[in-house]
Structures are given as C-alpha cells and as structure tokens.
Length: 244
Ligand SMILES: [Zn+2]
Ligand SMILES: [Zn+2]
Image (cartoon, rainbow, N blue to C red; front, side):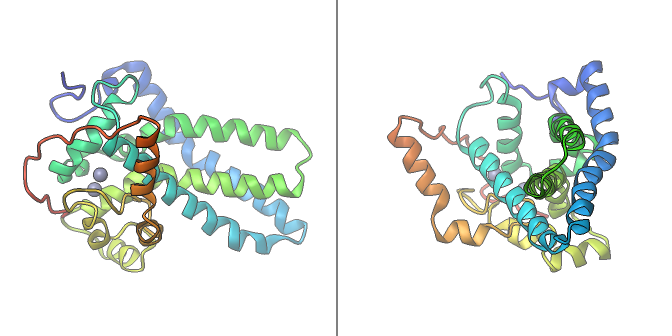
C-alpha cells in the first residue's frame, strides 16, 4: 500500500498538529540557526579566534553534504515504503528517480519543513545550553560547526529542488555554476540508472571524493556482511529520467 497521498504529499501533511509544528519550525529556522552560528562566532572573534570560522563554516557545509548523501543512499537502497517511521521518506526518494520534476511542486514550507521540524528544536536546545554555561572555546567552535551543518542540511532539499527547476533565474544559475549549491549537470550523474552514485545533494562537493574511494559500495558490502541487504529495486517508469 502506498504511503503517499495522490499528489505525492506525505500523509502527515494533512494532520493539523503536524502542520502547525512544521510551519512554526520553518518560521523559527532563520532566527534560531543564525543565532546559533553568529553568537558563538562572535565569542570566538572576541577571544581572538575569529579565523577559526574560515575552517568551521566550510567544514559544516561539507558535513551537511556528506550527511545528505548518507541519508539519500540509505533511503534509496534499504527498507521499503512499508518500513515503520521512514516508509514515506523511502517512497519519496524512490519515486523521485522516476518522477524527478515532482519535487518542484512543493512549496518552501514543505520542501524544508520535514527537516526543520526535528532540526530546529534540537539546535534551539543546543543554543540554550550554550547560553546557560560559560562557553569554553571548543564548545563555541563545535556550536558553529554543528549549527552550520544543520542550516545547510535544512536547505538541502531546497538546493535539490533548484537543481530540478526547468527554468532558473540568473542568480541561481550563478550559484550553481560556481557550485555554491547543487549543480544540475552534476546531479544528473545520480539520476542516471542504476542511481548508485553521487548521492550528496547539498552542494555535491563530496561526491567525486566518495566515488573515488568507493565509499557507498564498500558500505553496502560491509552491511551485507552483517546480514543487512539492499532492497530489491522497484521497476522503473522510464529508462532515464532527466533532471530538468
Ligand atoms: Zn536517489
Ligand atoms: Zn534529484
């Protein structure tokens, strides 16, 4: 039984409590995440370690790209639409290979909201702890890194959606061309059957490296050794679904 609604929305998007939570989380996303990066960043700068930010922010972005790849790989290959809790997410990832344009139908709230709903409260709690204690330098550095990674993880689905837009404004083409966000031709590598590489979808910066070291095939071999096997691939609607 499919776990998505007819128009490809998740079942929980119909629930008023979840709708309230998702909208609240999306509204709180900019102030909470900015505070969680700017406050510890300012503290580091005041202590004479502002140059750490030049390393921490790109590292946070790389961590987001890697995490996006890890989740994407897992949901593409393991479990089924009937898997508890993650079933709808698994189905969305697999349907996306056959119907890549469907992601463009989602508005901003639903594009980023499903990550916001767990990530924003977690960062808010982290920020409260940070403000509560006398923050040591390393905890400030960790907070900048952790919050930057979460900010880009929240934005990942928006970057992914942009890669699929049939028509893009000039500013977005510039961002994609300079690889600040996921670039369409780069993402097309993943959309080529058997959809088994280039899983990272924040900026895609990690993809060539992970491909070179055969990271995902090795993870699959490792999991197979402990008895966790890939799901059978669903029949595909088209032979090759183009990205845009
Ligand atoms: Zn995929
Ligand atoms: Zn895609």
